[in-house]
Image 1 (cartoon, rainbow, N blue to C red):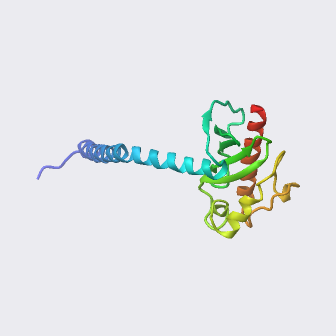
Image 2 (image 1 turned 90 degrees about the vertical axis):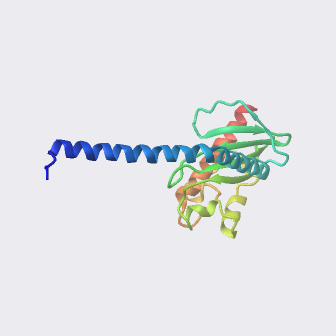
Image 3 (image 1 turned 90 degrees about the horizontal axis):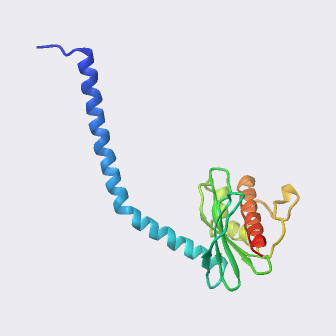
Amino acid sequence: MKKESSAAYIARLAITLLLITAVVAAGLACVNAVTAPEIEALNAQKTQTAIEAVLPGGGEEIDFTDDSGIVSTIYKGQSGYAVEVTPAGFNGTVTMMVGVDNAGKVLGISVVNHTETAGLGAEAASQGAAGTAFRSQFTGMSGSVSVTKDGGQVDALTGATITSRAVCTGVNAALNAVAKLG
């Protein structure tokens, strides 16, 4: 039996690994191509639901340039604006929709997407009593919004001060954006 040299052995292993990686990458690309339109449609539906939750009657997207990097999109309706914001939370960004009426007061907030800790920061988005109570605090607020720990009027979620601050940052960014629009 002939012995294979070290260089040939390493080359054979490298080529085998390259082929396996190429096949797996091609498979993932195919799965992505098949699922991408459905994922995009679901995200659009989720965004539309969030807009309707904070701005009755919905709205049309308008052009807006944000200097803070937190405001993603603004939708204008008859009764006000729905502002999509992405403040930094504990585990990543918290994507949420903030409704602001024409007088500059918060109509409501809806968390669209987050990666916050289950049972703590994730409560900001939950439909349970704690999440609903937390989000309802913002209704009717204007000016600058912050948690009580920072001298504000919003009671933070228990064990999730960073997430609570992130939501306040998002609400402040939305209020400032609408104020700039006039």
